[in-house]
Image (tube, rainbow, N blue to C red; front, side):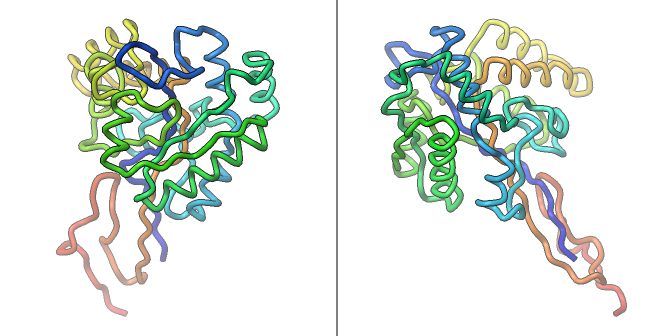
Length: 271
């Protein structure tokens, strides 16, 4: 029998949303450009067919489309299946949004998507995104590869307008995501922050959520996730999946989001 288990990692695209003296990327997606940049971010998100991505890149085995927010299904803080509007694929609306926000195409000219090629997912994902943006938006996005260590360092400095991003939970608590990726706690906008995203509303709610017991804080962490969605800080791509193939007489094998079950707990029944 085949067992597919969603793991603790999410892949997404990060926009650079802050331009200041320390963040050299700039670009058309920054928050200070108001509705036009918001609509461009939303257009780029809605022009990507996440279900097709999971099928083409992962054969729907090693990943599934991320439709429930940045936190994968099975972990505290998951929003629920098909609950992230940024996972919606609507190329007609996407092109309309882009046309209104960038009627001449000047803002989205010469865009570059940067990724590190060492992970086998990253190159096919980059080429898929490039194709989707060209076909569904009419925007040509160049691809740039940077070695992994340099890539991470430069991404966290705000060097890229569009970049490969992701996070693997260290433990099953939403704090591990929201403290480390966005807002003041993570060092945003200028230290260890891929997007630069920081707002007072985010910082205030995160401080409240972090001070609460887990059972009380979950609604606040979900509200933080919706702030990221409303501000279109990322494009959700997929959650990673582990595949296990067992004979039916093997009992107790498998995994959860965080770890594989211990081998010394597996039983072989009569067969």
